[in-house]
Length: 439
Image (cartoon, rainbow, N blue to C red; front, side, top):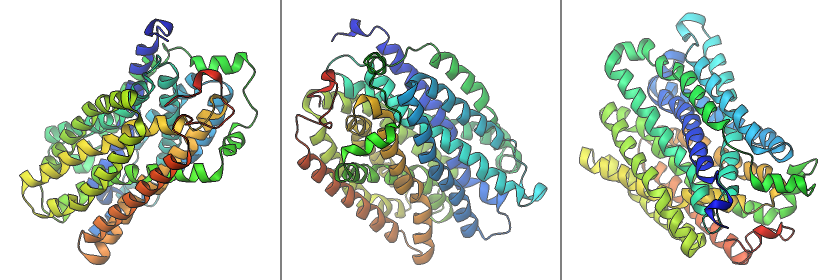
């Protein structure tokens, strides 16, 4: 199948990249604010350590809500189409972020402040829960032959792009307002900007066509009433191993993107803006390297790439915090850059690996199930667990062992998964013809 067979493929890929960038911008704004501002705004009566832990707990709430969004959006994405559900998810995320920028502080309305924060975080989580799987499927199912990994990687690029955008807006507002004013009220500006960014995203997203694979499923009357139930027919062992394989990437990414900020500034004395710029620079490396890895996956297969990427991320996690603990700015940049280069190896292809586990008629529901469960068990809990380990021991060694442990589990899971599923059949048996034999 040539590019001409899907004339809207490139437009769809770019539209999914833009949409996921905007959704992750909203999501990461919250993570940065939770690390640097929310303890003072919404939990002022707690100690700094307890306030940070409480702020990270509200961050985790969004991850807990993501499976609900994945299930709801996955159901309707398999029933009525990918395009409509992605429009709704973008709206939910943008409106939730805008309203967070309007929530009064604890000093103004007391306990209602953190309560409203949690409610809006749930709205964010539901919206993002519908985005991850849907955007990957839209891009991948429009892809020309032999380029499925490349196209599935475009929505993955939205993660580092959203992080960079969120951090740069945060830094710009902080510099313009000054630290005191930023902590008092100007932190709200990046959240309020979400409404403008979402408007742009909607204009682009409404111009893309529905997934060709979903159209074919409709034409052949292959849509099912309860797609999630059918998705479980893949079998518990394969579902469990797939989930285990993707846990590490989510956990490591959120420790890198969120926990590093609070740990580096509060415990190691690094300048806040220096760390944000360092993480943003690493995210640029992450963004730029995804197309490289996905092209390699299309040419040589994604399994070996995923396994070697899992080994690399395990090894770097063993040295990441020891490098930060040196206390030298140049060494810290090395630690951050390493994460920016290694995280995308597995992140670039995990969406396609998960999606190709399921046939078209249940693919949105099944992919959402794995992605969001992995996000909760991996990324959602990671900053909070890391803070608790740091608080109990006073040393980063506990966090290092936590990351090494979860990386080891994921590596073992990936090896067992690829060994149990034949190389030539990455999907369950009852598949549509055009998907047979894909890698």
